[in-house]
Length: 393
Ligand SMILES: *Cc1c(COP(=O)(O)O)cnc(C)c1O
Image 1 (tube, rainbow, N blue to C red):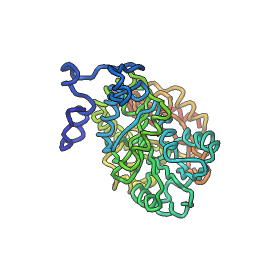
Image 2 (image 1 turned 135 degrees about the vertical axis):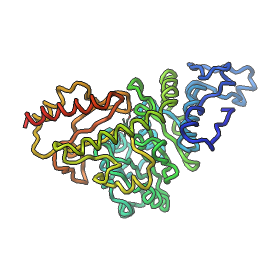
Image 3 (image 1 turned 45 degrees about the vertical axis):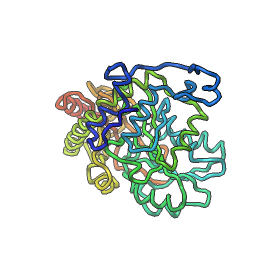
């Protein structure tokens, strides 16, 4: 990027400038989409000395570089590589820091497909995983072994929203030479500065708030100075890259990501407050609320909250009641991904897969993503749902 965005500007301004350069784009605001495998070298000497900005499609394109550079700037990272999905990004980050014979520490609240990668792939290549209580804090050091090479973090936890004491844990890991990887998908660099809080690698499912429209899959891994060469090397060895069209869509999503996140925060908080006042709701698991485990760390370390949170229903409601509620919603749809414009709800039960912590929230659990629909209509949809829930007891 020839035009360095002025880092004195706030994130809201910089996000409109990073990863594009009209002077190199025939004056157009946005960059062209480069598709390509072969790169042409004018002379033998150029081939022999590998004189090319890009020498082959697997090494990247200007379109990929624009997204990588923009994300590094946003995350405050030394460098970023992309992946065709968030899960692919997690796999690449783990394969960067781990080798056969190593020991890995994973929070029990981690995104479930990450668990499946540990059990199905890392075990096969001789990496042992130990799960830990996400609220363990400084006691994480009691789980360090001589061969522990990686401490994985995810904050808040998937579905259950425990906030981790990241600076304490990354500082302890650093002292032992243990690499730290965080899944920062919920907060994004807008609400949590992972590298400034000591994380070596930070993974983001761009599928969520970067894409923002439920129409693409994308992963990013950013690294600090110490880990950047290793991350880039691992990426180059694997050559698993997203397509040009998806990078273009991600860059387009980036321009409104700050605005959408601020709106998601406002709507999420309003809906969480409304739900907290409802008699059908036992607990609201939203990082900005004091009932959320680890709320004090959110308050200390984060600069905001996004639009995804969970609620626990009163204990008397049955599965039939919840099914009756969710099968007949008018606006809220059921689906796994989130960060798009549409409101979503899913039932979940962490007890089905946890191995070292108890999940006994006191009632049935729902995860909600608040989209951009009219707030009064969303509340009315939930209110009618609660009536069906009550009838189904
Ligand atoms: C969605 C998600 C992922 C995976 O992203 P995909 O692009 O769907 O593979 C990883 N981590 C978290 C926390 C997520 O929510």
